[in-house]
Length: 424
Ligand SMILES: C[S@@+](CC[C@H](N)C(=O)[O-])C[C@H]1O[C@@H](n2cnc3c(N)ncnc32)[C@H](O)[C@@H]1O
Image (cartoon, rainbow, N blue to C red; front, side, top):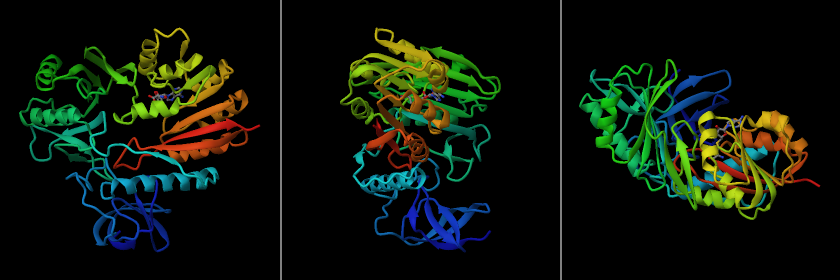
């Protein structure tokens, strides 16, 4: 399909602008409402076209120059061409619209917004490594290109912390020296709250390189590297050199976070998030469902006599158990939330729900409707699955508050806290 010209109507969830071409929806990245843009299609189905901008012919007045030299090529950021305050408004409007469209939830009152420092906020980075397009003895370090699985090589990432940028420089330098094994395909790192220490996970189909030599070189170049894990993706064998985790301080709590455990990625907003989620709570029993390493569990234990924390991932469940071992009132369950709710349903004053992007699903929503905790707190990283789940809970629960935490500035991602009370 050839290039064509569209006028962008609005921004939609996913970071793209919505336009129409011959009546068909066109989703275009890196554009703004009102802009007239020449686009080239990268995907076409019966229902829609996905496109990238070739030339912005009429730019919106609010368009700004992006800070990052890779913006528009790298697939990691979506909104650098929009002032940060406007990004927040766009996300709030998209949240409103998604709840209305998919959840039939009409809310007129304001959604409380929690802004983040817009740059260098990420404590975690997932880098791709691929053969260098021109130098056969080197690897390229970067992220997927927008709309593609090919690599956009980078030297820096302005939304990542300084320590993670140090890592990106080190990987590029080792690659240029031929010291990075050519079989590596991914590198993931988590830096602590002070941006001092970190763990690093390297992945390759075969661990066919001298791991000890690489570990020594990385330790020399990268101060604070506490743990290096190598993952053989063809067999899932892992080899760990070091502790296996780092410690992350959030407010008064210190949490162990292992290589394979989930952890929230915004290093600035974490204390605010924990504070807001656990504010004005009290009671006898709380359920912390999808508990991860226990980010909220310890804070809940200050307010409830008993907390039951449920987490299914092996790594995170082990961290969780270690992180609450000193708290007499906390019990942990290494289980899926659905199994937990079906097999050992437990009366509680509150259930905190923090599921992955796919949301609760029908089974968990039904089990909660039946179990009937008087209060639910639902922390969501995807407004569409949140809307669908709220509709499933709606016969029994009333939405009484919404807050948007901008854990992911410059990107389309939206983190929402929904407060629900059991309907009388
Ligand atoms: C969005 S994270 C939240 C973790 C934690 N509340 C936090 O904020 O750090 C979701 C967590 O749920 C876990 N998980 C995913 N599916 C699950 C399931 N069906 N049952 C229990 N835990 C699950 C994941 O391993 C992950 O740790």
